[in-house]
Image (cartoon, rainbow over the protein chains, first blue to last red):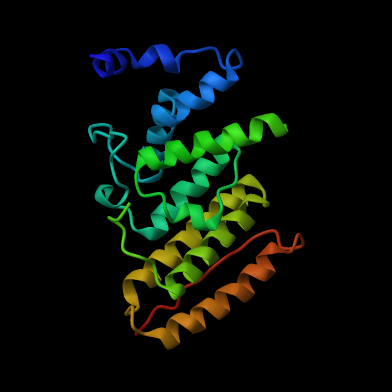
Length: 118
Length: 89
């Protein structure tokens, strides 16, 4: 019952004010993955980078390899993401990114890490 | 996660070099950058298709050459990149 209620209202937790409840937020982050806007932005960049038509459906679980990207294309995507989000992805990490979800998760982590330092 | 086969050391080196080129291109003017990116991207993709993955000698040669070219490109005095092709008879 409790799990059902959680999954039926995912936006409640995501939509919390960004700076309001830091402890609550960080504990939430591990449960529900990257923010929806991050995923959307990643999708957009991937679509542009791979020159996909607008009919191609992109879901968070889409793997780059399934979209016709080889490892060189993946490097391009990661570089594009770095620039769009103003982050630096380490080389070891970039090789673990195979899906949009993984990319979005990593980006949120890096952006979060950067925010307090700035 | 497991969907991607582990990359070999040589593949990692190539990808690292590619990343280096794209990074270096960022430091140039927007127009040149576009040009550099398209040349570099075409070169890497072409070589990835045309060279047998077991042809280590050739790949290592291209890696060395690429590293030298990257060092040149990284210099702030270098403003652009150009390429030409031979027409093979």
